[in-house]
Image 1 (spheres, rainbow, N blue to C red):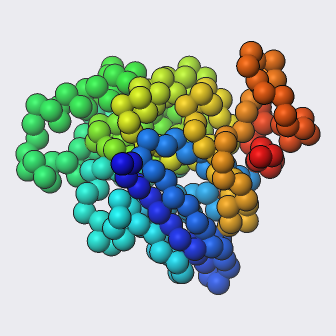
Image 2 (image 1 turned 90 degrees about the horizontal axis):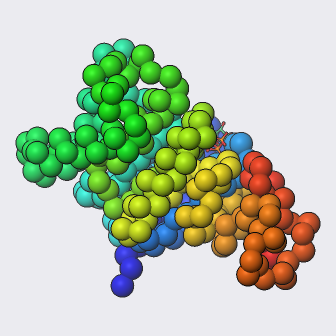
Length: 259
Ligand SMILES: Nc1ncnc2c1ncn2[C@@H]1O[C@H](COP(=O)(O)OP(=O)(O)OP(=O)(O)O)[C@@H](O)[C@H]1O
């Protein structure tokens, strides 16, 4: 039986009295690859942060593997890639040190750095093609490279579920493909992925579900948007009006496929 990674019921968040999440119902089961889509400011990052308990709900409830965030203990099961690099600020951390910090939740259980930790860090650096920059200060990397460091940090933790807030933002096409290939391998291994994206791009083949957030509510939850050219693919079942199919570019206008 598949586990439930996240279960939010009537989730609400307000900032300074302004409602940002206005009653979100969202359940993510193990093995799903869910894309959170929506316009700037629709509440995607707030939803991600509240799913993880980083932004407290002002109403409703949310569970991580069946536990309220404050009671959840198995943080090694979650790999979070925030929107921007939030580590190393003012502290001269190297790329390897930042990536190795992704092992901390596991090390607490194992108590000391092991060969497995070192191997996981090396593999993660290799997966994002940053092995040759491992000893460099993370601040000396470009924005796109720093994004790859954050992805490697999540990979190093070998979590069950990845939560990624715009992992492809500011990342070149080659690295986007690298991330897509890496995630495809993880998904084949049964991992769960929740990610915020503005364009599916090379991630499109692995996305199993699209959740469109509009003004703090779920406006669509179902099949992900399809890229242009889908109708030309062999086997495409021609039953939907083309007016709703403009999704090859930014997905902010996506209305959800008709069912
Ligand atoms: N800590 C905060 N304090 C006050 N307002 C906030 C805070 N975080 C987010 N907001 C507001 O909540 C709204 C939703 O922001 P959020 O970052 O969740 O949107 P988003 O869909 O992720 O946008 P984007 O696609 O631009 O990243 C915005 O109006 C934002 O200004």
